[in-house]
Structure formats: C-alpha cells, structure tokens
Length: 207
Image (cartoon, rainbow, N blue to C red; front, side, top):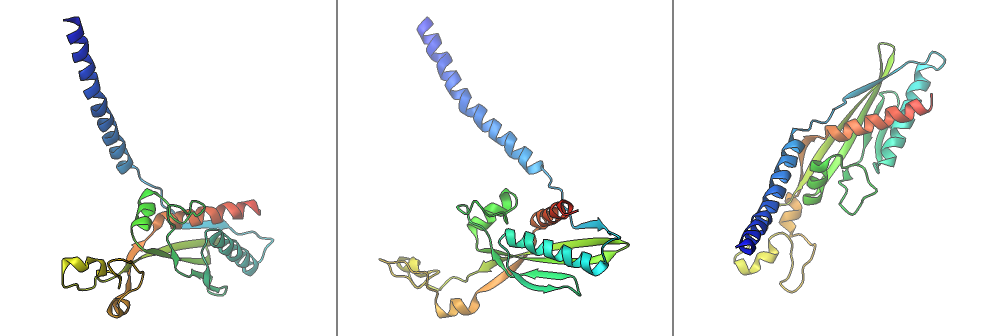
C-alpha cells in the first residue's frame, strides 16, 4: 500500500512540474507584453557661450555622424546649413551578427531575422530657444517579393526563385525583379531613442 501511495505521489509531482513551468512561462509572457519602452523624440543641449552657434552645430553633427558610423550606418547626406543628416538604407542585423546594435528590442530583432528589413535614419539639428536640439527619425522598410505563378505543386520550388528540383538558386524571375518593392512599415522609435541617447552621452563626455 505504501509503495502504491509513493508511486501515486511521484506521478502527481511529475505532472505538476510541467504545469508549473507552463504557468511560469505564461506569467513571464504577460509581464513582457506589459513592458513599455521610454521613447525619446528629441534631445536639447544647453548653448555654450564660449562656442559660436555654427561651431556648436558642426561639433554636434560630427558626433552624430560618428555615432551613426559606430552603429554601421553609412551617411548619404550631411548638410550643415540645414542641419540635416540622412543615412543610406541599412539592412537589419541577423542573429549571428552579435556585434551590431541596430536591432533594439526583441520584436525588432525577430522581425529582422524573419524578413528582409532595412532602416534609414534621419537627424535634424537646429538651435531652438538658446539650445541645440536634435531630432531623430528612423524609417523601417520591408522587402516585398511577389510569388511566381506555378502550374503544379511539384514545382513549388519555383515559387520565389528560378530554381531546379535538384538545386536551389537565389535567382529571381524577370517579372519578380520588376515587381520587387520596399514597403514602408513606419518608424522605429526604439532605435531612434538609442541613437539620441548615444549622441547625448558622447556630447557630455566632450564638455
């Protein structure tokens, strides 16, 4: 009798462990969904009287370009007079590119690994009310690749590329190349916030 009771207790404990793990995972998932990231759309730095407005603006643009370069962005346009910096499209970092920092947050990391994502950063630097203010906007785009029309299920390997059954190629059909397009997904505010934080950090170091 005692052995049977012990066996029953062990079975109950064995069943309870997976249930406890599942419940714990659900709790963690719920907590993760409730987390809110602080978004920064603009940083303003006090004007230094000993430095001229133009020189101050030049220094800020230099720091901004340096920060973007460290994050693997390539500058496409830098206009000192307008205080504008725009980057070339940067493909999203893949999971094995652990040294990169352009995927901010788990959602953006997953999105970049599942789809062809690219981002374009644009900074606006100007003097406002005695302060030097920097705004950052990061546009996100996803590659849309149309499916190739196939006649039978046996030729499913040709759905996206002009492949053979025995060999897969990264070669698109002529019509697919023509219809390829980058679709706008809006702004990546988390990455924009990270860029502004880094600019502010490097600026304070030089004071």
